Length: 218
Image 1 (tube, rainbow, N blue to C red):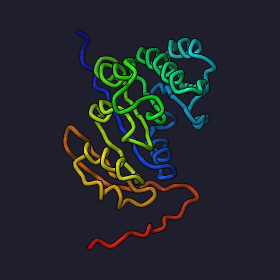
Image 2 (image 1 turned 45 degrees about the vertical axis):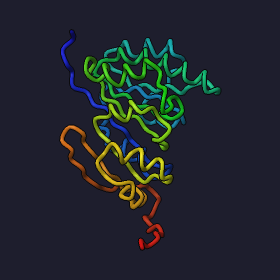
Image 3 (image 1 turned 180 degrees about the vertical axis):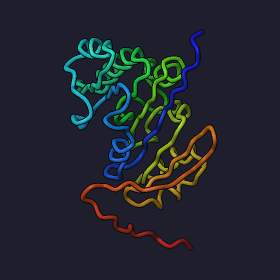
Image 4 (image 1 turned 180 degrees about the horizontal axis):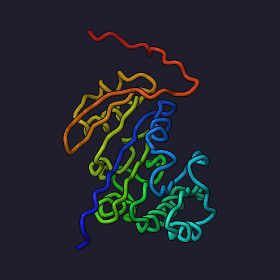
């Protein structure tokens, strides 16, 4: 059996424009994280990594000693996108010691389904390949349950729908109401191994923090 290589799996969960992308990019060490490989659904990481035009090019890229690459999926139909993601996961599993970013996991998993290669990446990839994964979603109630269960760290911003707040809160020792109370840019972080929970705020460029109206509790 291969020696255990301590990796991490970060669940980055927040509604749109609540700061999860800003937080993630600010967290990365400068000039960039270790050997990043990005599933760039929205084609937004152009400053962090160079785009590869095909999965074959991705294979060649991660064979180099150093790299920073992103892949923008081509598929438009759900079934095709899941197959493309499965192939991508199979490839990047071999990028030992890399930082893996997956944008919008709900596009390629569901509560009862995850591509086998993704499950392997998020479990054996951490233990045997030393991978650090950051996977993001605006809709945690729609992603596969195993991913939430396997996350070593939870980083959660405001989530608009009750079902998404409930899905996140169930894995971080807090109440859905705690997530509902978050303002734009605020977050709660939970480390499962130590049960440590912290809160903070990230500054979103060009956005002034405004209080959201809340209903008074009876």
